[in-house]
Image (cartoon, rainbow, N blue to C red; front, side, top):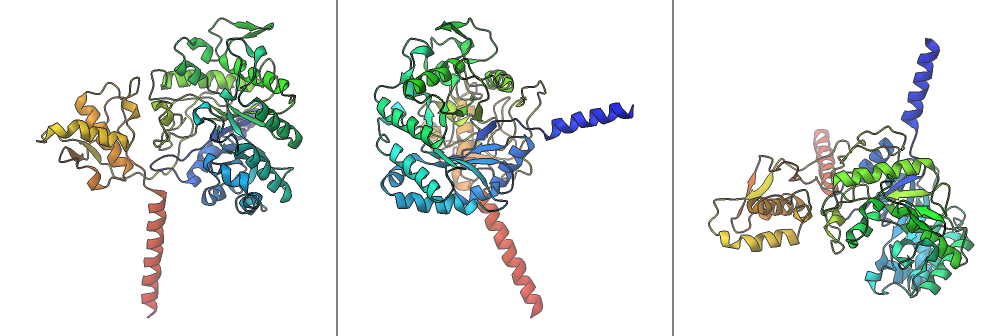
Length: 476
C-alpha cells in the first residue's frame, strides 16, 4: 500500500510541475486598462506557460520577467523600422538599453527579437518593404556585436499572406510574386544566422474572409473530408497552410530554416464565428495535435507555438473585424473564458486566472429612461462607441440581442469604464446615470474597469510619502 501511495504522489507531482513544452503566448497591451506585468507573470507560471511574445520592449514591463524562467521575445513596432534601417548606431544603442541591460545573473531570458509585426501585409500597401530587411540586418548585427548573436536571434513575424498557392494545394506554394526576391533574401539571412521563420496562421480568418470556406476544415477534429495534394491528405487548414510555407522556403533555397508559429488562436466574441463554443473546439483539437509533436506532413516533428492571445484588448484596431478585440483566452481582467487542456493529455480544466485583481468601484453607467431630450440618444451612443468598445453588440456578438435601451446602456457603460469611471464620462446631455446595480444582462457582461497600474503606483508613492512625513513629525 505504501508503494502505491508513493506512486500516486509521484504522478501527481509530475502533473503539477509539468508545463506545455514548446507553448508560448502573445501578450498585447492595446487596452484602456491592463493587468500589471507581475500579474501576467503569475498567470503564465500558474498555467505552466514558459514563453511570452511581446510587441514592444518597454523596460518597466520586461524587467518583471527576470528570474522567472519564462523565455521572452521582444518586439519592435513597425513604426520604428525606419530608424533601425537607417541607423546602425541606433540599433546598437537599442540593443544595449533593451537587451543587454536585462542579461545579468538571474535576469531576463531573452531568446528572440521580433523586428516589425506582419510588415508585408497586403493591407499596408508596401509601406515597410524598404525598411524591414535593413532593420533586421542591423538588429542582428548589433546583437552579434554585443556578443549575443549565438543566443538571441532577430526574426520577422510574418502573416501567412506572404505566400500563396492560388487555387492549388501546398505543392504549388510560393512567396508572393511582388515580394519573392525580398523574401528569398530574408530567408537566406535566416539560414545564415540560424534564425527562425516566424509565421502567424489563423484558420479563423480563412473562415471569416471566405463564405465558401468549409468550416470543418478550420478545426483539428477530423470531421471534414480529406483534401489530397501531390499524394498527401490534408484534414485541416493549418497543416495545408504551413506546408505551403515549407514548399515556398524550398523554392527559395531555404530548406532547413526552422519554422515557429508566432500567432495562432480563435476569438470569442464580435463575430458570428467568434464565440466561446467554436474557440473551445479549436483549442481542444489544437492542443491534442500539439501534444503529438508530429508537426505537418511536410514539416514533421516538434513545432513551437505562441497562442494569440493571453488577454482581450479593447483598443485594438477593428478594421479587420470586431473580433480583433476578443482573441484572449482570458478576459480583460484575467478571468478564464472556458476550460482547456494545454497539455493535450485529457486533463481539461479552467485555466488559473489572475489573482488579486483590483477593480474600480461597483458602478455602472446606464441609460436614464426618464431623460427628456431623448432625440440626442443616437448621436450620444455613436459618440460613446466611437471612443470605447461596443464590439460585443455587433452581429454575432455576445450582447447582440440587447434591445435599443440595452445597446445605449452598454455603450455608455463602456465609455464610462474605459475612462476610469470619471463622473463626467456618464453625462451625455442628461441621458445617462450612474447606478450601483450590476447592469449585465444574461451572457452579456457589462464590465467594470480595472484600477490603473499607474494610479496604484501613484497612490502607493503618496502613501509612502505621508508615512515618511508623519514619522518625521514624531522625531521633532
